[in-house]
Every structure is written in structure tokens, then in C-alpha cells.
Amino acid sequence: MIELTSITKKYMMGSSEVDVLKGVDLKIESGEFVSIMGPSGSGKSTLMNIIGCLDRPTGGSYILNGTRVDEMDEEELAKVRNRNIGFVFQTFNLLARESATENVELPLLYSGVKEPRALAVEALKEVGLSHRLGHRPNELSGGERQRVAIARAIVLNPSIILGDEPTGNLDSRTGAEIMAILKDLNAKGTTLVIVTHDPAIAAHSQRVINIRDGAVTGRAG
Amino acid sequence: MLLWQVIKVAWRSILANKMRTALTMLGIIIGVAAIIAMLSLGEGAKKQVMESISRFGTNQLKVRPGAARLGHVRTGSVENLTMDDAEAIKREVPGIKNISPSVGSTGQLKYENRNATSLITGTTPLFMEINNFPVAEGRFFDETDIKLMKKVAAIGTTVRKDLFGDGPAIGEEIKIEGQTFTVIGIMSMKGQTSWFDPDDQVFIPVSTYMRRLYNQDFLNDINIQVESYEDIPDVKKGIERVLRARHRIPEGVESDFSIRDFSEMIATMQKTSQTFSILLSGIAAVSLLVGGIGVMNIMLVSVTERTREIGIRMAVGARRSDILRQFLIEALVITVSGGLIGIALGVGLGASISYFGDWETVITPSSIALGFFFSVLIGLIFGIYPARKASLLDPIEALRYE
Ligand SMILES: Nc1ncnc2c1ncn2[C@@H]1O[C@H](COP(=O)(O)OP(=O)(O)O)[C@@H](O)[C@H]1O
Ligand SMILES: [Mg+2]
Image (tube, rainbow over all chains, first blue to last red; front, side, top):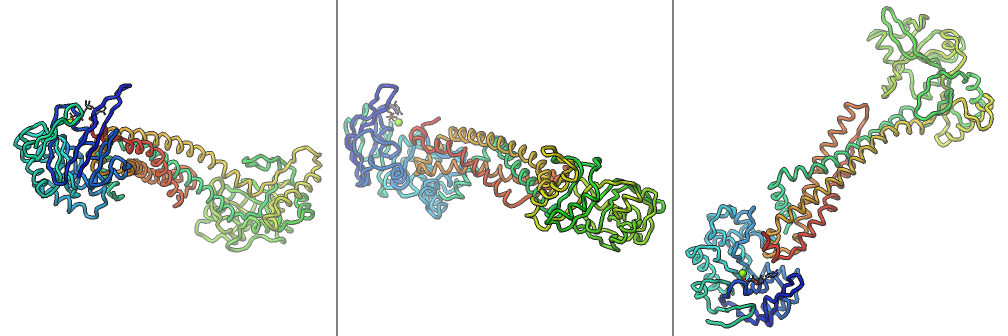
């Protein structure tokens, strides 16, 4: 369960402060599928990064599965990113020099799993990429790259998957395939939070959260 | 992340930039090679000294005419050391085990139609013991031969080869400077040192040399063996006192003779190898420093180029310590690879120094260990800053980096 209370985020731009998030309250139950929508620059990515423990809020409290995340040290945050959260990015963020399997192995290497190869191959099979194990990212299509990224996100069975515009760089057909995979994971019990501009994609979710100018404005669902 | 996995990642990034890495390694390679060559030279000099110790013994002193000057080999041109001086030293200075005067000059040898030029040394039987240079075949001349000024000779192995080839030598008659001598013994083989072949030498009784071959009243050397190594300073003082009195040298005036002992021989030998070592350690220090800075530079470039990679690794759970370790090991892989090549190069360099130059070199495991240690040290010193910089990146900013 994700529980954000009065989350704020400020950036220093030269000498002036920029309020990117202005007190966000948000509660997402385990197993939910939530879409976040809003205009560009409204603070969606900033919010996702905080939820994903990549960034720290300036103020407010964040409780993840019953633990205060905003009070954790760097080492504990790294562990949460490794074990509890799978992050899928718009730009895939794969390592160019490594094969699909090696990219998926990456979280396993940092968690100290003994046999990373088998788990990575298993995850790639789950996203339908068994035939592309040794391919490098530049030898894969956009949809395939995002599937590798999803395999990497799910390889340690996290309770939450976060997608920041996961279909943003894909055509609508490929985007739909990616959404099908993510929905399938949600159906198996994983909490799913995605940022999207596409109402058709948001329509798949149980709940849509609208963000405008750093604050939640309304919900539908 | 396991160590071999980190090393694999490091190798991959190094192989992606082969040329760049090779150029970076160059400083380390040269530096480590210089360390190895320097140490092998130092070890070689030490070995030569040890060999000299076993060859001559540490208990040896030599009194020579003329004032002392370090590192300068003197010919017997100053004529002030006499048989009576030698007798006086033997009589008056305690702590002396053996004493033997010697005279010598280069002379012509002839046997049948063969000619040779070698050193003719006139001395006494104790010379053999003092110099640890025994006769191998036949006999050396004895006190009777000296008393009777016999024309007998014991020849070195080189002389034997030059004059007789493989034929019999003992009992044969040879001409030394036109006078007929009988060969009565053949010396054992002493082996060539870098400046002098002791086996290219003919020994004859000192009296024969001074009275019958040449008419010479002065000695070239008084060879002395002391009772024990610790006595050397006292014996030197004693000789100094006796000879200065006999030569009537006033207080404050330099002696007209010099006493050479083993420590001076070592000093002379070590001085030359030391000069070379200082030069090499300078090269080693400079290239290791420059090489280290090169490694730091390339690692900073690598960290910048791979900012996004660092962000990705952090996003999937890498801790700051994981990132630090990864870049530190990458620097170490570069310097240790360079170090290993440098060790190989240094071993080759040492071998060619002793092959082309007249130097002995010895490669020891400890010098290889030191070369390895330095390559690790340079990797740690110059790798830590870039690695720290990488580990302190902000995950979000790293992921946004274009
Ligand atoms: N590191 C930063 N420094 C300053 N301003 C930032 C920084 N990161 C984001 N912002 C600003 O915060 C606002 C929200 O950004 P973001 O969360 O990426 O919006 P969205 O994802 O909704 O398009 C933008 O106006 C952006 O310029
Ligand atoms: Mg965004």
C-alpha cells in the first residue's frame, strides 16, 4: 500500500524556489491499477520518482507497505528500489552494451541472487521474449525493448510496478501490447501505477488521478 | 554484486575503448617496467658483491704505494713500498694471519712457436691462501725456491690454454721476457671479473722477479689476511702507524700509501649501479605519477560518459558502494593489466641490460611483487576520486543525463 500525505517537492532554480509538488495526498491500495494524468510539466514524473524511491520529497510523509520511506537512508532506499518496486521508463533505460538477459539480470546482481541467469530467462519468457535472449537493445524493436524493461522490473517479484509513460515512445499497436502485459501483471496481484497522456490507456485502469500544477485536482474511476 | 561480475563489467567497458585504455596504460607499463629493471640491477650488484666476498674473503687488506683515492685503480708507479716494510708490518702489527708481498707487470711469454702476453706476478706461497687461489695441478713454488731464486712458474688456466692448448704443461720450459722458466704448477680457475682475468697470470717467486727477471726494489702490493673481520680497523691503524713512521711522514701530511679493504671494493662496485638505480627510480616515479593522472583522467571521462548507466544501475537497486566499487575496480583493472605488462617488459629489460651492458641483473619474486603492489596502489590512489564522484551522482539527474 502506498500512502502519500502532504508531499511537497521544491527545486532551487538559481536563487528562486520552484514548487513542483504542492502538497499531494494520495492513497493507493495493494493490487490497484491507477493512472496518473495531467498536462506536461504538472509534476507527474516528479511524483512517480518519489513513489519509486528514486527521489526524496521536500516535505510530507510517504508510507510504503507500512514503513516510513521518507525517513530511510540511501542504503535502505536502494534496497526498496531493488526488491519492492519495478520501474518502467518511457525511454526504456536499458544498458546498451549488455544483452537482454544481462539487462534483466541487473537487479538480481545487486540483490545477491545465486542463479541470476535462470530467473532472468524466466522473466523474459513471461513477456514473450524467449527468442531474443542474447540480443542487445539496438538489435531490438521499441516494443521489444520495453518488454525487456518490464522483464527487468518484474524479475524480483516486486509488489508495485510504476510506469512513467511506458507507451509514450511506442506506436498505438505496440503500446496496446505493452499495456496488455502490464494489465496481466496487475491481474496477478501486482499494484500498477502508470502515467499516461492517452485516455484510451487510462480507461483500462480502475482509477484516474488528475494532476495539475503540482496538486491532485480530481479523481474518476 | 560478486567480484567476478564487477570485473566482467569493467573488462567490457575497457574493451569498448581499447585504444584509449592502451594509451592510458602506457605510463603504468613504463613505470612498473622501470621498477623491475631497477630492482633487478640492484639485486645483480648485490650478487656481484656477494660473489666477490666468497671469492676473495672479507678478511683481506691490500697496502699499495701512493695516496688513496676511491674508485681509482692505481698502477705501481710510486716506488716507496719495500720488502722491509712488509717485514715490519708482519713483525709489529698484531691481528695479521698471513702477509704476502707481490710485484707485477705485463710481460711476454713464449713456448715453442707460441707467444702470449700476460701479467707476471712475483709473490710468496701465502699469496694463494690470502687470495683463496690455490694451485690445481703440480705445485706452487715454496720458500726454498724463493731463497734460491729458482726460475719456476705456476701458470693460470688462460695462460695454459694460450701456450699449451690441450697438451701437457707441467715440466715444460717457457720463456718469460726471454728467460727460461720451468712450469711447475697450474692454478685453479678463478673466473673473469668484469675488469680483469686473474687466470691470465703467471706466478713466479718474488725474489726471482725482483733480482733475476727485473732489477726492482719496490713492491706493488702487500697482501694481508687478518685474523678476523672485526680486526680490520685496528689492523689498518697499526699498518698506518708502522708505515708512516718508517716513511717519516710528519703529522698532518697525507700518507704516501693506501690501504684498501673490502668495504672500499664494495663501495666502488655499488657506486656505479647506484647511479643507474637512481636514474631508473626517477623514471619509475615520474611515469607512475603521469600514468596515474592519465588513469584518473580516463576514469573521469568514463564516469561522465556513463552517467546514464550509473542512473540505471541505481534505479534497479545499486547502492552507492556498488557504484564506487565498480569504478574503482575498473581503474584497478587498467593499472593491474598495465602493471602485468610492465612486469613482463621489466624482466625483458633486465635481461637485455645484462646481455648488452656488462651488468649482472637478478629478477626476484619480491621485485615482481613490488611492481604489482605499485600498480594496485596507483589504481587505488587515482581511481578513488572518479569512483567517488560516480557514486555520489543523484539517480534522477543521472537518468536524465543526455
Ligand atoms: N531538477 C529540476 N530542477 C528544477 N526544476 C525541475 C527539475 N526537475 C523537474 N523540474 C520542473 O518540475 C516541473 C515538473 O516536472 P515533471 O515532474 O517532469 O513534469 P511532468 O512529468 O508532469 O511533465 C517542471 O516544470 C520541471 O521543469
Ligand atoms: Mg514526465
